[in-house]
Image (cartoon, rainbow, N blue to C red; front, side):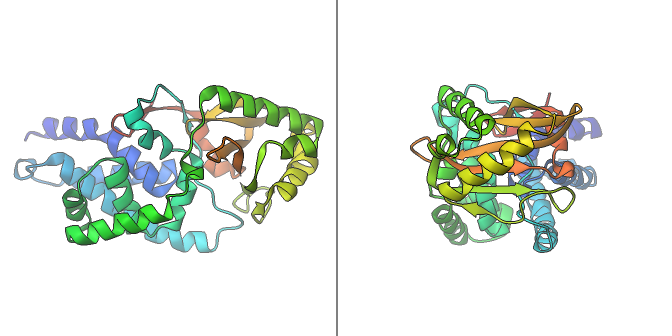
Length: 307
């Protein structure tokens, strides 16, 4: 394989590798780093000796992500306040029924739920359940037996079986809920807001210790509706900024701008009956950079590619 062919092979695989790495790591910058490290390793190989380039690249990228997850865990132990995956401006396109799993696996609610899993559970689950690899292929990537792969995927599946973080309502329902949410925030009506929230709703914000954010997770419709209607309403509507509707990881959400500078994004998770079950607010400026570019999602392959 010539150097040009090797480069072309890698560039064809890059969007798919980015889709895998972002789902594993939860931040776009780390995903790009992992894919770039994979490219450097690929450059040093004898391409003619690799019978399955896609398999080699998937293995190398996955294992690089696992290394990064180990170091990320140590950093997150000392993280100030709740840690939320980095939001991206991923447009919600047409999603065939067979590809819904890949669309669901990009929502902030789903990525946040993946934090429950160990790194290898996360990798095995994504490779098998989202990217459609066989247990034999997963075992090869992770260097384990097929039975061990089955156990990992089974254990991971039990931890992510709850429907709430995997439910994406129809676009018209999202639009209706977002309009109602904005009305409630603007009016400061606790009663109006509570009618949109599930009983088990959770609210969390990520400032990373760099900007003001709630340092704990709020739970329950009563506490969350009071906080959003009385505190967040005042901050959002009294800041002199502008609230804009934005698509965030395929879900309708909100972006708050102050002097044309993005300072917060809000995205939701929904319960199976269409109520708002999770509210995520990203305020950490380092994790808002991914909102500055539009990213295309290929639901057929899970690939991510900046437009």
